[in-house]
Length: 410
Image (cartoon, helix red, strand yellow):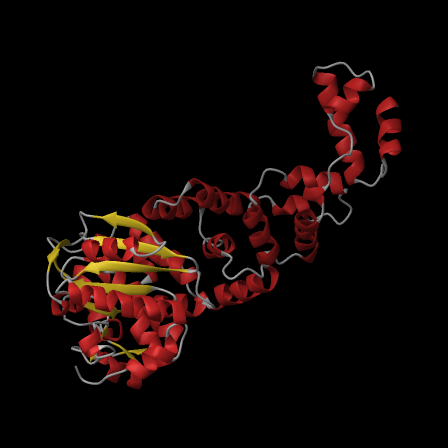
């Protein structure tokens, strides 16, 4: 152990988590096991960044330790015996415990075969040196730093470095994670790591669509993901996801506009609709199939291009609100928003925004049951009158309930 960080750790961890970490360390020691805090939380302790993912590695049996901790508390315990992992959920936070393990990749891109191992085995299987540090939690060495791969040095130098030359071959999703950490932390790829990334970028073809989509979604959930996409384009990473996707200045401008409109942390659906905006429908279908997008996102992506092809219908400044509604009703909201941002026609954008902010929420006060009470017979005529009433409401021809009743009687 290169140094002891107990005082730093005690200031960094929230009091309930610190108290539990010390209890867990004592319990592990009584079982003859060693317990470590590992990964991102150790990295972020050095960086002074908040991190609420508490990953613990046990040299021994993580499930037996978790059961012992759960018995003495109100935690909800979930175990996965096949993987040797457990999760303890407490009010406001959770702990993930895993038995230290080694792993073997049967082929590039395959999920690894794991078996119990030492802490050293567990750390070497991780993605980057800055994520391969551990802090001891057992009482004898509480706060002791284990930094076998010089992660602290790389943190100080602002470098993202893989742990061995076959890292990207074993798991090419690390290529996308490297770009994510590079941007999030303001770091740079270490020279040899960048060389190996460029060498192994074709290994992204070995990764399943679901895993690639997950990594892409994580990038889009970062702040200013366009910077990562531009870097991915520069390194020819984007072209391995689909040759038509570009991380260019236009995309950066659209993403910045998207954040002004959508104040959520990460407008994922809207980002995706903008990402595919300049693709053909054939290219879009290839991407949807390759990354196995779920139905809702795939629909929004398809609607984006379908609507784009018919935007000329919305270029008339004299369109009635009911005409705008009729043109857009049924399209996914992110598809409409993407077109509102990307259209070069101020009139089209204005009509799209009017639908999003107002027209889609307009509903008559009267419903079918009200009309039947007024003497309208059930059948096609009822639906026709309801549709006519909705159009009148959209166009401001009726405003109050009495207006609507007069309209129906007429």
